[in-house]
Image (tube, rainbow over all chains, first blue to last red; front, side, top):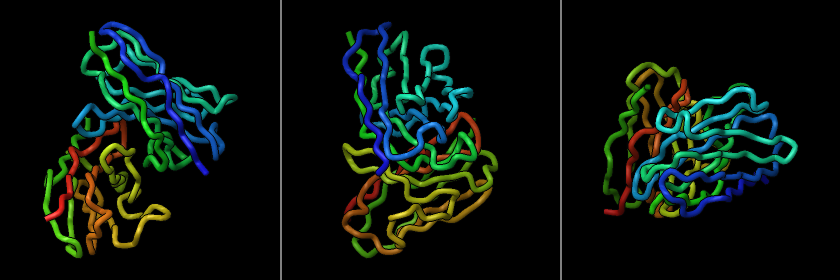
Length: 122
Length: 107
């Protein structure tokens, strides 16, 4: 059974940093690209970032480029999102999601974690 | 970035109704589109991938169609558990972009 479990969310002041983790199990982690998707309170879904299975290729939304860094440790089956220079508008539930194909880094997200809440406020 | 225009933003329907939700892409995206269902406080769930393929375990009353710029999600006979918000997502290229969502409410 595929499981994705996020952690690391919390309250942080504007300008601060936070690192999210997503522990994966139930599939061959290194074979699949992984992504982060966020949802601000009461709003829709926003794609944040994707990393290839090997970790050699990354993509970011313009809204987080230069501030957020996606990475993965395939030996630990864990995905990360390092978030720096946080702003109030980064407040959201952050979901990790597994890409459903090994062929490409794009593709539908077939499994999602339960989400972790990040609140940026003074 | 490719813009995904989803309509309607909300709708009211009764159990047993046929429901149709559309997404229009600002440029052609082949069939690189997925449909997701989200219930309050829960993570999204994949319903349809590659525009028309039913994800494993999803009831057959859900179907998707379209290619290029115009896409449709259809629920053939709405069930009580289908009241939720639905999103489309283009995975043709980066940045990946979601539609604005359609909230399906009980009439």
